[in-house]
Length: 323
Image (cartoon, rainbow, N blue to C red):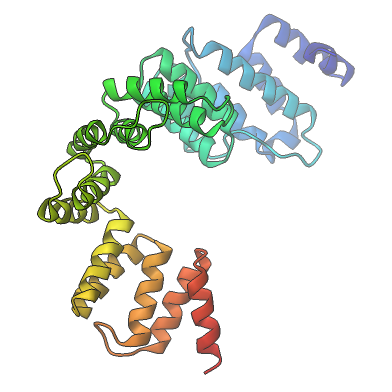
């Protein structure tokens, strides 16, 4: 049964007529007159659609697709349903900007949907972003192809997407392209090529690339073994907020019997809500590393780490509870 037929059968012939005429404002006004809509998340989707003043050839399809969803939800408004679209008022303007062709707004909207695990809705916007040659859109297209999310797992598609995103200057894509050469995924494994590309990504500020360069220089993979360069890149990665690098520097300080410096690094990781960093801070307070022993603080940090899924922290809490 078509949507028009469903509307007529449900006693909304007027709305069915507006739908056939593609009269957006009349459709929205009709649905808004019902009290149930005012107290339903549908009202925010209607506000989102109402804010749209223009569409593009690329976004026209998504706009009408979302309007169809609004009408379908209107028919179900008196029932408990999972509402799958934007429910934050702050995104009403972003949606209108995206529909009007603003690529930055498109990526914001796509990431919102992605964070809500609405991957198909997110991918619709990435597809449009690729039509507009947006590097970030190609990057996520590559990720989805790698994961087999929404689209089929395909390393060729992944590689080509990362390559195009890199050419468009998207930093994380440069890092992922280097990873493919390092691992030999789709392309022939090549440490030297990987190191070269990681350096490009590091110059663009990608902290993960900085960490990998530290690893490559330490092991002499693709570059001459150089501990000074290795230490430099690990430190740069930590300064840019990579929690693996931060904890690593904490471990190095601990090995050098510099408890205060170790705790300082662990605290930086913990402040970024890294569970391992939180565990390490708890361990420092429990053991008196870089600070006087403080079991109360140790438990607090172990609890935070445990809440973030750290199994060792859970074990330490049980041991401490035994007294």
